Image (tube, rainbow, N blue to C red; front, side, top):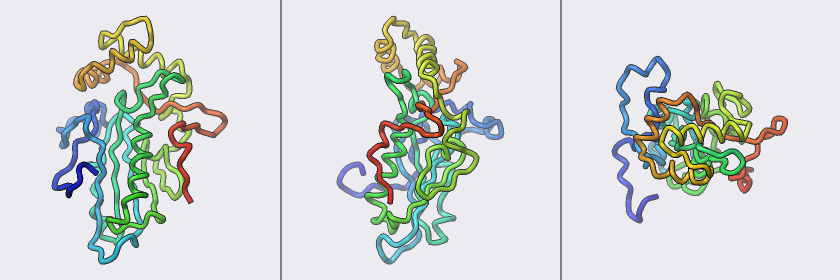
Length: 238
């Protein structure tokens, strides 16, 4: 939680930086109703009126959008909360901001790390909101359903979906090089290209994502049906 005092959650936080024009065709002509900013790693927590601590079941919702678009703000949780459930919706970094990588050198799964951190926050703090950390169910659809485990409801997504992962290090590498070229980062050394991209503004990167024909997805080494997550090896669920 930011700071030591109360956090006044009277309005939606920003959505994570993204190319809003890449949203599904059904919505793309409508003005995007939320602010977009890199400072976006927030949770929305909806609770019913509770008289005791740590007793209610918890649903953690991960939005979809093929790791390119979407926001926790698009999914109000007050309806489910009115049924006696603590509802948590999660923002995570998207597109190049969340999945820029150089294959095995830099796997770049920052958006997945954001999800892991959110789950850890829930385990550590949800009792303060009336939720039971031992009764947490993850719910997600599309990209939000790719990374689910433990008690889960995965809608229209699967961990091995070809459309949501990059299994070849060369493809992840080439996507980053293409982004770098568009942004004027044409150095011969890959690490220098990476450092150059890091100096570009949020708006410049969003414009590049709108222009170049690549998508930045989660990178995984695929062995049969087993996914390898470097950042998740210390997670234990019982």
